Image (spheres, rainbow, N blue to C red):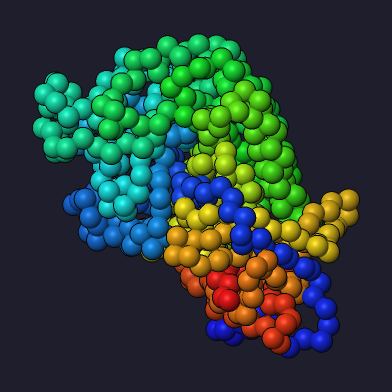
Length: 510
């Protein structure tokens, strides 16, 4: 592929697809936290993958790998969720403070049965978010913990007076209160977080949050643990029964090529039926969100409660020869397309979807980064996130698509083109396009109401193979390339030629 891909040339043929952006009708803000990340104590997602300790030979800052920090800074990570996940409901925060040599060693019963050294605790996590300039999302322990334990953890993190817990935080090296943006009461209460009914959880949440107190200037937003997949009952019960101290309800959905947990499908070496099935499965995110939003609109018409998709992404069969409890999988062009399709869905529901956290940042599931000892590579999903950075805190713009061709195989059919538009903080109009078809390119004629679109400049992410990926032997096989387009005449539309199986993000110029 050439370093610069022409988005269009003066073509006599009509474009396959017509796309119209209404730049005068500002939609809801696309909260930057939609591009949030998730770091759980799972496999090598934290230990080895990110944390090596301050005495390691691997270059690090406060124990965090410098190469990983640099890559994540370049990604403008806005938010990190920690310490889980299922791990959160067995995590006791006092195990992770004080001298590391004296911290208790536990067993990570959820993920591989390996030792948990507690070397990464509250202070180390806040070191990470502060180094990255990110916001912090802490998940409390409702399962094996208690209301008192969560309340004391919140006081430890946010108190600014002379309470014993505030003094303990200072003694452990952080004089000022931590900046905590979100705090969740439990995780997946329907499953690994306690196998509860939504009614039982709602009662526990109301009790717990009554005692979760922080200074007004440092009060985090509180999240309730919601449902997953097609289940809207959790959103129904929580939004109806909890009348105060609830800022968002969480939601989890993972994309499995087969749709079956027993045999999910391979991360690489898949045929086209697995490509289209994966994309069809991930597009279920749209009706799942829409159904939950309809429930919220009924019970919370003032839109006080956000919808937080705080676990999502692809989940495949683990890589052969790896610990099945570590959830290590390769990451291909297919994953980048999945990510971009979900971004566009989140943008379309930005009035309610105010946060998402892909699972996970490093070495786990749909990761941004893979590491092998001192080696590191950026995945196609990382590049999709980097391309979409201009959409963080941008103002969404309505658009319409005419003549959108279907991409079909066997009995499965999905839209060929997905798109999203927004006005970024720098005033530029950005357009994101995803061509799901692995064979057929698309010519997209772009019109902007009230403006004359003359050119587009940005990046395209594509490759020859559906399962193209970066490896430690060839770490730059899949990466964005320059993309440019110009109008063919004074009155003609701006036509973008989108390659097959591609993600394109451009700034549209007048």
